[in-house]
Length: 99
Image (spheres, helix red, strand yellow):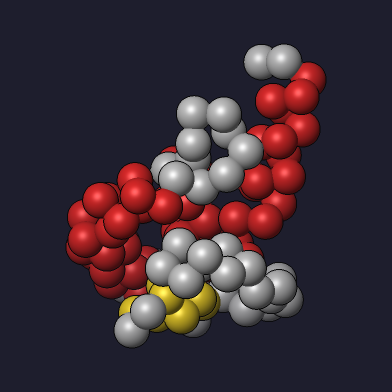
């Protein structure tokens, strides 16, 4: 990966938890904020960031919103399954992520 691409990707990674693919807006959040409101859904911040990062443009400098929209329903289903799994985990650290 070229240095310029690396810098673009690092900037995208740093801002992923702030982006809302439905509105196109960035909203700065505190690290203690574990949940994002995305449309009518309450989404765990780290899982949403991973979703956004997995749907980047080919140039790695932005989120591909149309790809996000195409994958959104699948993500929601998998997100909800994972949240339920984490809620019932015997590991306190894992439960903290969904508290």
